Amino acid sequence: MNNGPVGDCEALIVGAGFSGVYLLHRLREAGFDARLIDAAAEPGGVWYWNCYPGARVDSQVPIYEYSIPELWRDWTWRERYPGWRELRAYFRHVCDRLSLWSHITMGTRVASAHWDESERLWRVTTDAGDMLRARYLLPCLGFAAKAHVPEIAGLESFAGEWHHTAHWPQRGLSMAGRKVAIIGTGASGVQVAQEAAAEAAHVTLLQRTPILALPMRQETLTIAQQEREKLGYPAIFAARLQTSGGFDTGSVDTSALDVDAEARRYLFEKQWQAGGLRFWYANFADLLTSEQANRHAYDFWRDKVRARIADPALHETLAPSEPPHPFGTKRPSLERNYYEIFAQENVALVDLARTPVQRIIAEGIETADGLIECDLIVFATGFDAGRGGLMQIDIRGRNDLRLADTWREQVTAYLGYAVHGFPNLAYLYGPLSPSGFANGPTAAEIQGDWVRDFLVTLRDRGFTRFEAEEDAEREWTEGVAAIGSMTLFPRAMSWYMGDNIPGKPRQLLNYPSVIGFAKISEDVAADGYRGFALA
Image (cartoon, rainbow, N blue to C red):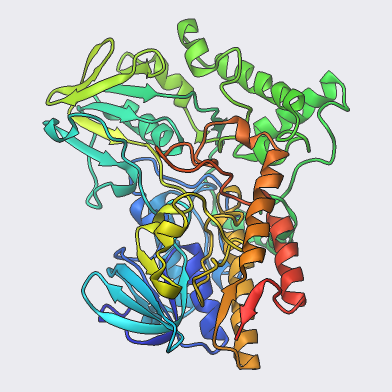
C-alpha cells in the first residue's frame, strides 16, 4: 500500500469498497495506469467506517463476496452474515491475492476535482494539498458515504458522548453500565440496540417509524461445510446476475392474489424460516407493485412479530395493525433478538410520533414527556443516500459547473454512470443505478466490467473524451422515475426517495432491477455506446 502522494495517472478511482477495489483490479488487468485513493486507513468501504457494536452485513455469503475464483477458493468465513472485522480481513485478503496494494493510497481524501477542457483531464486536489492529473475520474463512493446527523437544538451542550454509527471511534467504545439513547431504528439502530441491551445500564430507543425487520437466522460456518458448498459457487454467482436484486434467487413468477390463502402462507412461511432478506426478494412477483398483495405480506409479518413482543401495549408501536408503509418499500433490517429486548427492564421505547424531541441538554434528551437521562447518544440516522458522497467533493465539470449545483434540485444521470457537463467522469454504485436495491458485490462486478469495457473501447478507437448527452441523461432520469411510479416505493417516506434529508428533492434514487439495468447497459454498449458523445 502506497501511503505517499498520489501521482498522475490514467484513471483515478476514489473509494476502496467493493466497487472501487474490483474496478482497480479490472483496469490494471486491462493495462490501464489506474490508482485508487481513499480517506480510510484501510480498504473496506463502509466496513471500515461501520465499526459500531453489532455492525454486520445483511446479505449472506457467498452472495456477499466476489465471484473471482482465486479469491474464494482459499477463503472461508466464520459466519453466514459476517461482521465488520471479518469483512475488513476479507478486503486485506483480496488486495493480497490480486496484488493491488502498490496501486492503493489510503488515508487521503479527495478535496476537489476540476475538469480541464484544454488538456482533457481532471485536476485533483487532496486534503493534504497534493495535486495530480487523471484522464478519467471514477468515484466509487457508494450510496452511504455522507452520514446525516439531524439538527437538534442544544446538541453542543450535551455533557456526555455522541456518535453517528458511521463515524464510530475506531478504537471502540464500551456501552457497559452506561445510559444509552439511540435515535433511529433502521439497520444500524437495530444492531446497536441488540448489543446495548446486553450490557448497558439502560437503553432508550427513539423511534420515528417502526422498522419492519426480518429474522437474520445467523449461522456459524465450518471450513468443511464451506468446502462442500464451494462446488456450487459458480452456479450461485451465475444466478445472481439473473435476478432483480443481484441475490441467489428472485421473486417467484406468481401473484400473491392468484393463489389461495394456504399456498400464500406456505411461501411466506418458507421464506420467513429461510431467514435473511429472502422474505423481501424471493417473495411473490407483485409484492412491490400490488397494494393488496403487499398487505398479505405485511399482515403475515405483523402477526409473526407480535408473537415475540411480550408486552401487548407495545404491539401498536412496534408492529401496528395498519402498515406504516407498504412492506419492503423501506429496506428491511435483519434482527436476531430485537423484539425480545423490549421485555428487559433496562430497555425503553419512545415513539417520536407521540413524544417528539424538543432539545438536548447537558443531562440528556428532552421530549414532550420529559427528560431521557443518558451519557451516550447514538445517532443511527442514516445518510444523504446516493448523491451525498459525490456532492461533498468539490467536483467541477465544463465551464466550472459544480456537481453539487447540478444536483441541487434533482439528481440526473445517464445509465446511473455519467452526468452531462462532466466529461470523463463515471461513478459506480451511485444514484440512478441499482445501488441501494442491489447486492453490493453483484453490482460492483456488473458495473466494473462495463466501465472497464467502455474505457478499453475508447482506448482502442483513439478516443480521449466521453460525456453523457443531455437528451440521453434526461430520458434515463425520467425513465427511472416512470418505473418507480409503477411500484409502491413512492408510498413510503424513505431514503430510497430522499425523504430522510430535509430539503432534499423527492425522487426514486435507485434503478429497481439489477438484471434490467445490466441488459440495458449491454445494449447501449452493443450500439456503439449510444447516449455518449465520444471525441
